Amino acid sequence: MSPVETQMRREVLEIPSAVQRLLDRGGDDIRRAASAIRDRDPAFFVSVARGSSDHVATYLKYVAELLTGTPIASVGPSIASIYQRQLRLSGSVCLSVSQSGQSPDIVDMTGMARQGGALTVAMTNDPNSPLADVADHTLNLHAGPELSVAATKTFVNSAAAGVWLLAEWADDADLRAAIHDLPRRLQSAIDMDWTAVQAALTNRNSIYCLGRGPAYAISNEAALKFKETCQIHAESYSSAEVLHGPVSIVDPGFPVIAFAAADEAETALAVVADEITQKGATVFGTTTRLHHATSLPTERTAHPLTDPIALIVSFYAMVEQVATARGIDPDAPRHLSKVTETR
Image (cartoon, helix red, strand yellow):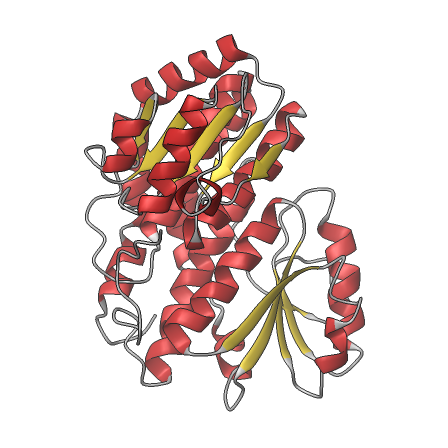
């Protein structure tokens, strides 16, 4: 990692201990919420979130649908905060994700969901926040103070809390065991050498991030972090969509990073990564199934559904290096503040 001691770097290094703290302290709240979901037996979930938290919600959408066959749909917070409409959510579960728990539109939408008949579960790093006040259940992320504007350990703990909630609801012993093994895996993930990606970004100001299934959420988060910490224009695509138009932008040396978990989508993503490489792009992937693109060293976890969490930790360690190498302070991105309160 960078020799510059940024706050972002310190918080990335804290991720394994932050997840361990969640595992040590968060179990009772998670099991109570999972029991309530089991009693509700929902036909569907809705999610309420913005920014990095919305990428957590995308990850949880795939986890719920793959694990239990229960769909999760993202709903626009402005339906409640701006348009002041009521959705019919009887019998559903609403998952609200917000690191601060402060944003008025997330709070308003969660309150509306509860009024509309949803069981509401809030995931936040502040259990005394306005969001916690309007939810039926609150899952404290136990991430500890996060001072860098770029969310890292709160993203990881949100993802870990959410997948743990779904594992408890589904009573999936294998997934539960993988979650409890995460601190050890994430410590290794921090140390993965992704400096080749940094080198490929020299004199480049655009990149594509690709994913498929749960790893698509990581692609989304990576693209956001490139923009906010490095001032690099980054776009995220499903590997199933990138060949439908976006690939036309690719020129020789165009950087691409493809995020793959060890699941059924891994081979399909590798095929697309190789195809884009043959069009001249410089492509990296978190899989060994590549023939033309470059494989990145990757820490696998004990379950495909937790692999994406390790991928984002390796990415965070790398992107902090990219930012500092470009002379940018990732702790204080221009035009941004730690808490964004939208209405």
